[in-house]
Length: 380
Image 1 (cartoon, helix red, strand yellow):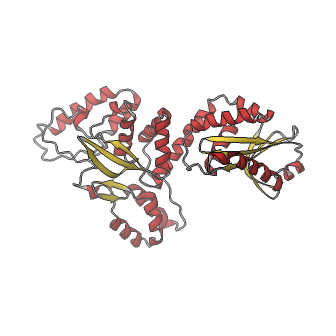
Image 2 (cartoon, helix red, strand yellow):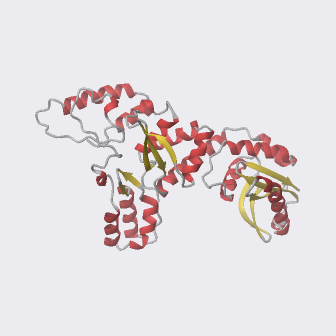
Image 3 (tube, helix red, strand yellow):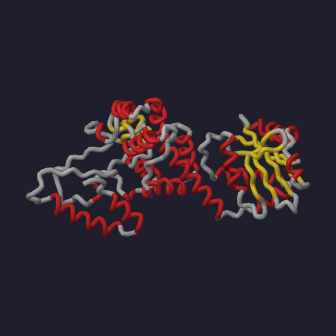
């Protein structure tokens, strides 16, 4: 019986967990105990079965978890198996790509590939040698756990998520007997659930007194994509329900102090998955400004002698254009210098030239610099 806990998972998220637990307990005890026609049974699932209280009438169960060495090669494709597959389809040139996207899972001491994803991608490449890797594996219910982790995250959890997405690791105590009812009791339980459902992998394991600790990381690019997409969806939903009229008013009034404060406050609430590079701030600020009523946001638009990062344009008959250039500072003390550098770039690159030809006549120019989750705003 494969994925015994999927009905429990669906029942939990849809509000009838206790009823499903009672039903499955009755069904499994009837099928697996005192069954004269059954000699041997294998039951698989993401979570251990001992504490789910649906096997209370059974005994002589042998548990094998993804931390155990036994059967570790059976949970996915090994490197040797993937190499043979790529060679068979004459796509060995994609070896490093498929490794980055679909490898990285660790069962016991064996590293394996996601079997579903590698099969799907190999099939795509068989038909189209220019096909790009995609996230083929995504369990909707488990993805909701990532959404819950993001939405419930305090500042420490956000820092841990940023660390993971940047390629780092976190360390957490392992709870092998976690159930769906336990998931939201602590953040550690959420991390454990993500580990046992394949959204994190074990890097190292250590024992401290009687508690086992796991060093965890994101397995591969496919799972990293799921995290990033979830964070983007969460940020987009959050922005839609937030009152940003203060930021929009400050932009038009050239109130740089209020802008600095409001942008920094919103930065503290976000999760970075670009390791504080310009791309992160570009996405963040674009997300904040895209809801500004009466204005259209343009990103990296060709203008003058180069590309300004962001432009907010009114209807042409109003003729107002807000031009923003962003810079990232290496230290806090560089914030003012970088903001000034951004303003100078707007003038030197003549970002307003093409807009003047389109009928815009009132320009507000901003140089904005960032250091982690702080910013400096200059206007001219």
